[in-house]
Image 1 (spheres, rainbow, N blue to C red):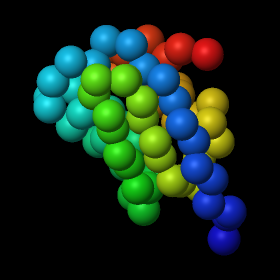
Image 2: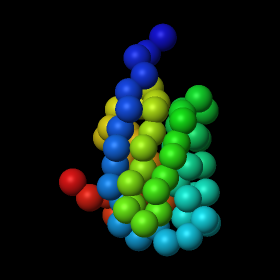
Image 3: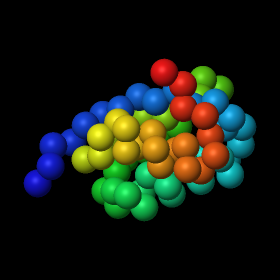
Image 4: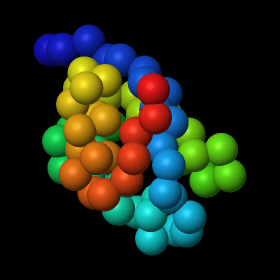
Length: 69
């Protein structure tokens, strides 16, 4: 079993609950056991997952959001 990582990813372009749902579902599609929490005002996505940060960020990018450094 892979180790669980916690990633804090700053995302630009999320503005509503639809955005939260889209990002959450994109991450869960890659890791069904991921724990995702999103703070819309700050744009912070916090995810506990077996995915690498790059894989998690890639899933968010594929949904059309900008991942900040």
